[in-house]
Amino acid sequence: MRWWQRAKKLSVVESKGDRKADSLDVQTLSLGAPRMGLVRRSRLGLRRRVRGQRRSRLQQLPSLPPKLECSPVFAAWFRFDVQSTVVAQTVSSASLMFVPGSISTLSTNVYSFASAIKLRKVIAWPPAGGEVNLQWNGAAGNVRDSAMDVTLPTGVTVTKPTSFVPPPESFSALWWEGGQTSKTLMQISATSGSVIDVLLDYTLSNVLANAVGVVASSVVGSVYYGYLDGASTHIFKPLGRQSTF
Image 1 (cartoon, rainbow, N blue to C red):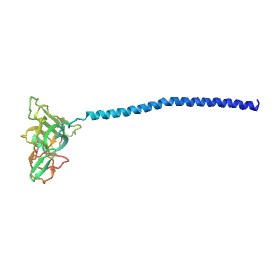
Image 2 (image 1 turned 90 degrees about the vertical axis):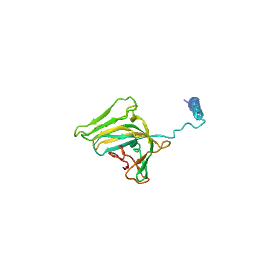
Image 3 (image 1 turned 30 degrees about the vertical axis):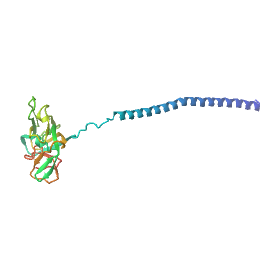
Image 4 (image 1 turned 120 degrees about the vertical axis):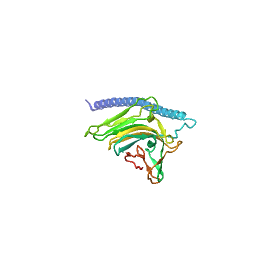
């Protein structure tokens, strides 16, 4: 083959390759164009939805301030240690009023933080060979008479606690305020060394008056947490919290 024939053949091959490359570029551009358009449209739709959600939130806002609960309810666990073996020790609404805390105003007077309390649950851990017995008291309606007990054989340690819940429609399940006459809510019999947890709901003083408690000694301005059975017998001592009687 002559040299000019080879040159002509190479030029033909190069022109075919250029045409294939051009066609590939055109296909790539034609395929990429719709995808870019979809991305732009999806972003535009997202922005429109966000703006719509913002407008709907603004429309949901009330034109006037809504009703506000001015006496919020708090819930907390309180733990007590049984200082000495006791039988049928009463726990009243008055003693529970000082469990969430009180402040000393005189050397012998404390004012409760709580304006109202509600007993939710009691959990007990007796010591090895000990017992805890709880009896609900003061039924406000027609409720079943009940008492619960957990007793351990000597040398046996408890693996799970025993929980007690106030019966519905009983005095123990109601709200109690500081200005009401003290009412016995439960009676506890327990061996020395038992641990008792109490779950209380309470409100801070707002409309209702603070309960006034009498103690033997206190420092004015100091905060004290009450015994579960009150300042007169002081058998169920609060653990982890400063107290006085």
